Image (cartoon, rainbow, N blue to C red):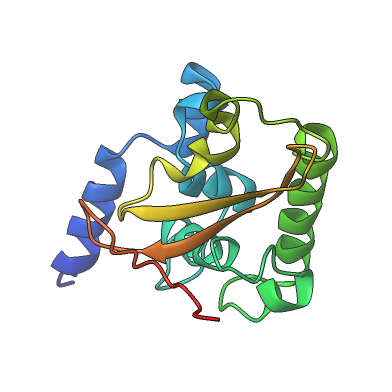
Length: 161
């Protein structure tokens, strides 16, 4: 029986990469990227799309300026069914409730780092805008521009009266 060399080389490459669950157990959750955390949460991919690729697609939805997607939007992705979509939404809501940024006063740039640090492992530069109210509480942190590997272009816009 002839061997499928593409399939075999893919299996060898996957075997060479440390598995996400094993790294989570050995090194802790803080050592994983956002995509790897999502891969651990999703558990499996589908034929033709591995769990890491699926996690990257979910991460793209999470990075969108529209905010966190609902379960229905997640379920539209190939490889994400109703159960996985609900698990991701539940994890996001639990994280928001336990570690959310509501009523967090910003008194220095160092106070923003825990809020924006999860964008640090992305492959492209991002320009992030953090909006504060008059009491210096965070309203939102949004990605304004996604650039290249080493820079992003942001141009100021001033409305003339």
